[in-house]
Length: 426
Ligand code: AMP
Image (cartoon, rainbow, N blue to C red):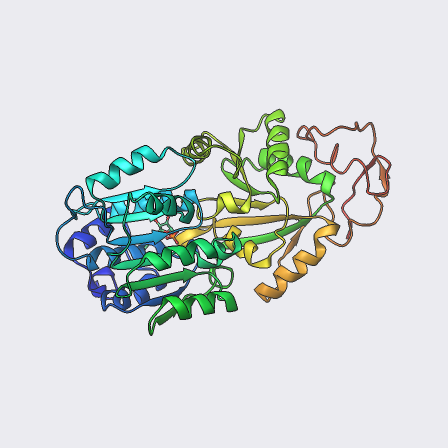
């Protein structure tokens, strides 16, 4: 097939694995990055989750690891992939295993929060490819459990997020362990000055490949804003999940505490919700994600960091319960839906206090996100800061859901006090 994976120069073992994954055509980032990496170039990849970037670096990486696999007892790894979060590390590792299933290499994943012993045992057995978060990898390096001085290919995935999370000192330490003579691939959704400076240090005459932002490219994501007060958010979300029968929704909150609170409220409403954030143990996070993927968990309530890089196919609904402070994060978040051309909806619940963030996001997107109103429950952003007009007939206070009756509890106290029911305006 012209323009298909066959035209990229990949070996038969890799093409077979790709076919078995069911991919028909390479995504734009794969089409550009795979040949460049196969030719041995360093790479600066402007791409975010959802674009197929993992395969874009994993497939050529697997092909460039020449020769057979390591001998047991050799603690030098040949390819290193650094990711900012545990979830992303686990997902990239799973991709490496899948794409490399017809090749002899051994891949291992290394992150904190789980026992080091199993990881050490794996290193002892000889590992070719390591996917790791920086902190735990450095622990192993310090203890002499793994050597990085024979790394042939180094991948820094989601570099902007790594820096946001304060990993720059760790990245520098890892860089000091790496040999000069290596191939380096850096992926980042954005390229602020700090990343450009890092690229200068890390990369040699890199090829630049850039794919359009998800927000501009993915017309498959329907973006909508609903204006609602802070207090009205939970009843509104509960109402939408039930009345529109959402079976799988990823909800973003600004903080871990808000993720926990919202989860409790939704559970009280009879919605199977589970939080996923940095305070949860690794096993709880893995369980939550597995439950969400297999359809047991209806709503996964996540903070940005925990949700980073979650690989969830065909996610129909993403809700910004709180708008992110950083406009770029909005783009990352909605990248979880409408993937690989599938339809998805990204809904933002915007309170008057968040209006500034919304403006920032719309500036970044260079377009206005369509507004939607829900009868009796919400008002357009901007309108909600006015005191509600209608007293709430027979309404009760408290934080339980609207019980299928939109508007009953939604925003039952205005910001200026008093129990009120909102009316749709305009
Ligand atoms: P990524 O950007 O690497 O997180 O990939 C996003 C999603 O797209 C993952 O679920 C991949 O399995 C999927 N994917 C990657 N490449 C392709 C492709 N060529 N065709 C269809 N789906 C793909």
